[in-house]
Image 1 (cartoon, rainbow, N blue to C red):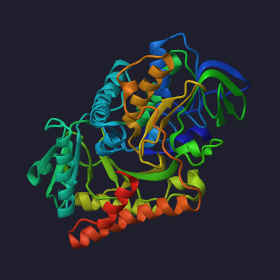
Image 2 (image 1 turned 90 degrees about the horizontal axis):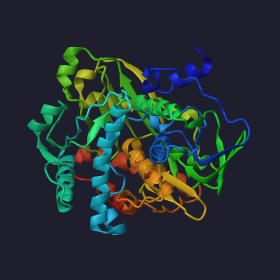
Image 3 (image 1 turned 90 degrees about the vertical axis):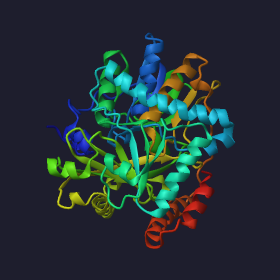
Image 4 (image 1 turned 30 degrees about the vertical axis):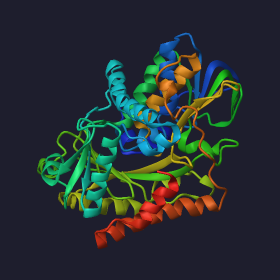
Length: 462
């Protein structure tokens, strides 16, 4: 195994277990011409290329990627292909009206099935299991939030087939978490192996004539061109699909805040442990605490479990060393064992992380400037595994001039404000992380909802 292959295998459990080679493909060597040039070979860029190729097989499409296809969050996330969207229905209604908000959420639900359909049609074995999502309510405050979430969904016409409140007994049938008082279930989520999806999609694109230049970092995006370290790609349409790595681009250092999410994976679990924790239908899972956690049972019988808690780094810095934080990994292990005490003696085999892109108003966006030919998508706040697919379809429609239902969704053309300059950005983001962690501890002690967390959510415009 080469040094490059070994380095990429060490990125995550997903990369370690993805079939095929992770050797980098050719880099750009000199200038090139294309019809569409895309910065970033994560899922946003690759889905855009995929749907453009279907719409017009004659298009010359070039992707430039700093590392390898599927290197970033696209290949090493928690594996939730969900209908989650970072902006709430209420926020979208304030932006664009009630019907537009509902349309956005319905489009996300349909996108989950679209990802599954494409994976099946293209023969991409991403360990697809549409078992839905269970949110455990493990305290009175969490149970109150569960009720509120379902009530809010009902106000917008989402019924029992979309989201339902669970009793403690019903929740336990799906997953035997500790201290259960109830929960929320939605069927609109699949557990997948994300690196298998990303690497499989890259193979499909290459087979269809799409050029992916790897180890080719993009420095600047300008009208009509991507400027890289080793050459310039000129194209009528130029797309930014760089998510948490966007601040490294010239002029984009305040576009999103790269915040790290960290993940652990257990060894394959013995049958008696799997029997004790449940999750037999492979629902993704979390509980209703403020500081986000997320988990899934993998196809080979492990638990993959992640969450927030790592600090934001001054100046929107992104470094490989930030992918690993022993204190956060230990906290994740403790939290996982609190959820499922049967895991107390189980070994952790993998621990990793990476940056996600958070826009200032917590609202993902996609768009195309017709005058300059520059398009963009991102700001998924960790909900990108399916949202990238909707973004790719939308960009393909915008580039080809198709007027469709998805090009009229409220996130299309949305422009998030820039983040504050440093040190305000560093102070604000890290203060938010501390507020949410403090709120969870306080609720655990008092049993009462945290006013501080509610105030911070209002500050973010949720």
